[in-house]
Length: 149
Image (tube, rainbow, N blue to C red):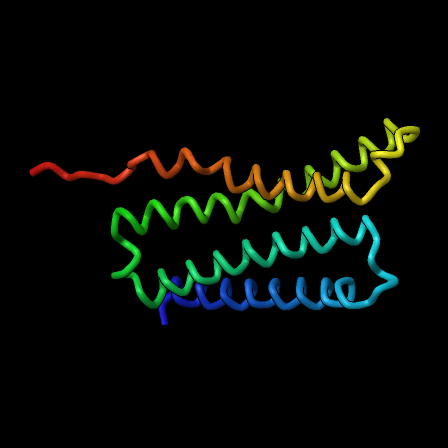
């Protein structure tokens, strides 16, 4: 086995471990009623963003390593580029939305709206909407390389 293959295998193992640990962490929060709180909703959202990102990069690593002939087309590159950005940007956006939620709940502690679940759901939904819309310009950019003879 070459060094590249070993690196891909280690990367695949780490991504699978990442998915497994995020699932182990989020499943009790989802199924135990007393753990249903606003802070845990943000934790589950962060776990879900981690799982989405890890699943994308796991499938990408497997495709690059074992099926490289199917990854090279223009349309596939555009789609892979979009989903790569979308899945990867969800993690920092999830951390930002937790920070925005905490900032608003501390700065505007007298406003009851910022203590409700609706505000938390607005934060989480806006994170996912921004994460889906932000990489859309990537679809219109054609960065394929043409070699002239």
